[in-house]
Amino acid sequence: MTKTIIAPAAVTVPNVPLSPGVGFGDLVFVSGQLPIVQGTGELAEGIEAQTRACLDNLKTVLEAGGASLDSVLKTTVFLKDMNDFGAMNEIYAKAFPDNPPARSAFQVARLPKDAMVEIEAVAARVK
Image (cartoon, rainbow, N blue to C red):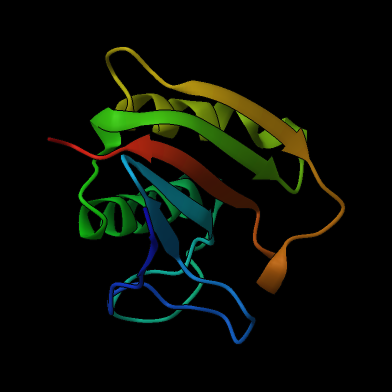
């Protein structure tokens, strides 16, 4: 097996050494997705919009790698403020309405671009 880099044009990559996603065998590993709105390159405003933007970017990388939100096995959510957990969770739940993936959530001191949320995932490729 070899790893494949997944880098859809719609997803903005910060100027750091990372790939938006990496495929290996039947798995897709998606780097933490920031709440950068596709097409504008701007940071979304507010926790709800930022969560949606993270999930949109996550979906784009997953689909480019042959996976989908339905095939996500595990996510990690990084929050600037754990007080935003409820609002984030409402939007997150809409992306995973049935059989949600395993998940961890952490409050962190700071995120790139001073984002309020960042989401990473591991998924199975859809056959």
